[in-house]
Image (cartoon, rainbow, N blue to C red; front, side, top):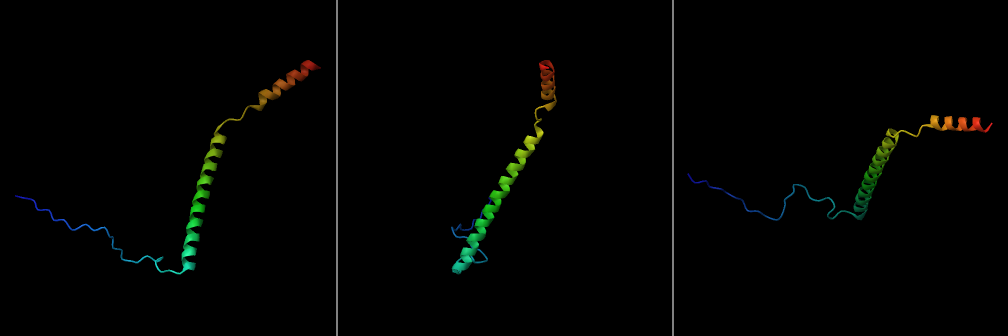
Length: 83
């Protein structure tokens, strides 16, 4: 039994149910949309930098700082020898 495949014509245009709100919009509206886009990008950049800073702080906290007890003991013995 032969298989019949039916294809629809492929077009380069895409039909959207709603029109683009920026087409024929006022310049003040377009400027506001541009400003909101800029603020959104700035917010993402700030959040990314904060996440990087938090990860760096967590890494610093995982490292053990040099022990101050051994340094203090060496200072006390040196001072005792000098007296």
